[in-house]
Each structure stands twice: as C-alpha cells, then as structure tokens.
Image 1 (cartoon, one colour):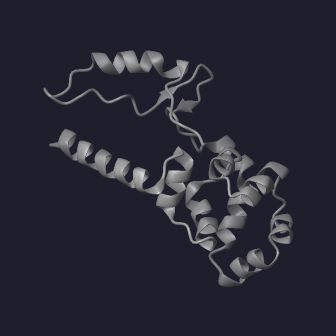
Image 2: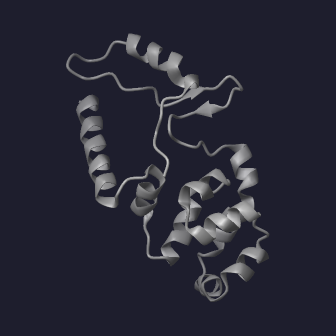
Length: 157
C-alpha cells in the first residue's frame, strides 16, 4: 500500500509554508498542493484526478457508473471478465479490478466517487477505500479522520 511522502516537488512549498504566520500555539500545516516542474498539481501522497486521469480512466469510471443499476451490478458479479470487456478496460485496469487494488485503480484513472460504486458490490464503503488507499487499517484510518477533524476545528476557531 502507498504512504504519503513529501516529494522534491513540494520541498520549496513546504519551506514557504513555514514562513507564513499562524495563530500562536497552532502548528504549521503543510501545503495542500503545489505545482511540479511540469506544471501539474501535486498533493503529497495523493494522486490528483485531472484531465489526463479522466481521459485514461474513462472506461473504468464508465463501468463503475453503470453500477447505479442493479441489473448491471448483477451482470458484473455473474461474469466479471465479460463485463470488463464490455467497457473495453485496459489490461492494467482489469488487473486492478481483479485484485481489488484501489490504489492501482486510482493510478489507472479511477475516480474514488465512481470506484465507490464498484466497492459497494463487495460490501465496502468510502472509508474502506480510504483505508486501502492510505495503507492503514480501517480503525486506524477512522481515528486519523477524527484527529484531522479536531485539528481543522481548532485551527478554524
């Protein structure tokens, strides 16, 4: 599983963020995003869903969107390979779906909001996806969400 890391593209932004004044007693927060040398948006540890991702993931996301209808969910469960072929998924996307590898689906252009529809077929929810994406156990991920929520409320106050 993938872990968030501070990349070279973000080092300068992190230094700039430390120079910005904040309320006393409130720790500096790392920047939410920066731009890489190629001009692409970078969020440390997070694949950014942009135009290129949308294009490369169109088939996967279209398949997941189809799961709004029960008949399509049933068809996928009955014959996963035929259903993926119907949407012309790439081999990388097919392998990610077969392995239930959420980070690989996201890397292949999957959007978490569409992937949630696929996850629902397997009894998973968005928090389960977040835990899988971050490499955390579900309870650890939930605790991290709660801790972040408390920090955000404290900073906003």
